[in-house]
Image (cartoon, rainbow, N blue to C red; front, side, top):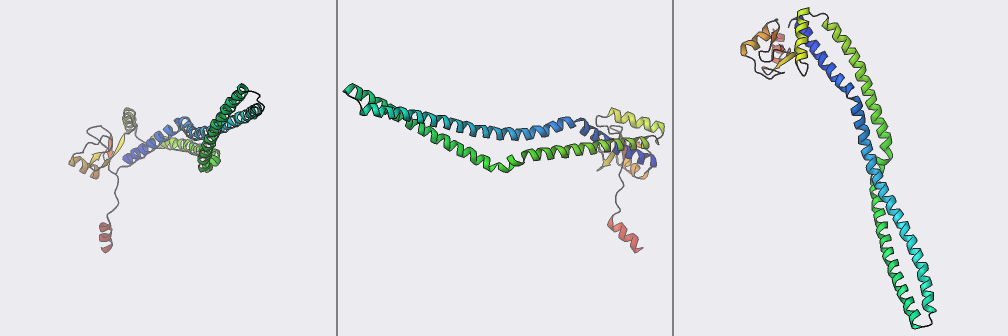
Amino acid sequence: MSSELGKLIELQKTDTNIRKLKKAIESAEQRRASIEQEFERHASSIREIQAKRDAAQTKRHDLEKQIAENKTYLARADRNLKGSQNQKEYETAMRETDALQKQISALETQVLERMSETEEVERVLAERSDEINSLEANREAALADFDKELAANRKEFEAVTARRHEVFITLPPQMASVYNRLAQRSRDGIAVAEVVGGSCSACFMKLRPQMQVELKTSDKIMTCESCTRILYIAPTAVAPESIAASQDT
């Protein structure tokens, strides 16, 4: 592999990393908001459950207040019943007593329903107690990790950008121009593509056998006949049997 091709490969790998880092940095605000939204979704679901519990408790207290008031009216109706002096007063007191007893019974049934509802909600909250107790701490930790990662990405971006410049200025002007033209023309910024399985890894077109041989044996810069990207074949490790053979000799 020629030194120029080696520089092009290094430049391509650097540019690919720069694109990845730039994308991560530019999308940081959106990704941070997504983290906060995810935690807010959990917090909101917990608040909904807590609100349901509070509503059930408030309703229960209102019902118990109504029961207490009706029992006061029932006691008065009982007194009226016992003190009735004629049939009409007696029947009126009986009807009032009966109506109040039915109302109290219905209200007590609703109280039991609210108690059952509250117990069920409390059970759910108990099951999620660890999540509830650690939610804010986990949120802060997740955001801290994100900010740390973002800072590292920015630092690496500056370093690899400087390294790219160092490599790029060592290229012959014509080769640098070709590289820039190919990279700018490509949506993915790929100007130098590895040959994988006999095909260009950028456009996936199969290379002619003769071209594959030339790539392995020649130091000249060669481009894909389909997408015109600069091609290379990565050096492969020496096979174990080759190592053994060399040791025997």
